[in-house]
Image 1 (cartoon, rainbow, N blue to C red):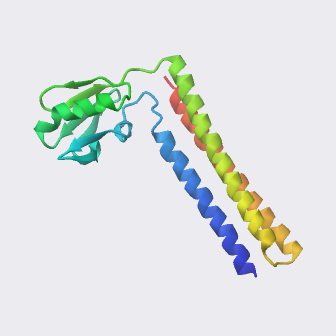
Image 2: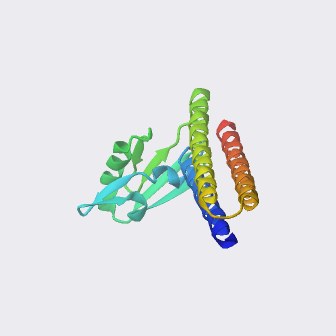
Length: 184
């Protein structure tokens, strides 16, 4: 009987960890004014008839905090890379220097920083909602089990403590991202 309940708690914990990992990935896409190759992760390029992620046809580097350098493995792709970055509508203006594509990252305005914090907050809230949803599912499964009521209450309390810990982690991740975004 306890094995079944342990399995329910372990499943809820795994789903909550996945939510946390998803949040971290989503927050990576929110730029904080510093150049990061992840900024171009959504850019795809037509490579011999197949839409291919930019990172698979070029080296993406950050020579300094405000510059991205994209060096395609085939020079014939330079114009295509430039076009793909423009089409991706990321707010960047790529410059082709004949060897690579250089992207200058404009500094963030105070207004834009506040928008990015709101976006990060929204992602954080969505993660909290999913974690609470996993708590609800786990509690329902515990109630369906044929365990005695005291045991069910103990496991529901364990699930609540797990939920509280993950919500605290989510808040900590948000605070760090907020600090990163608002730091000029």
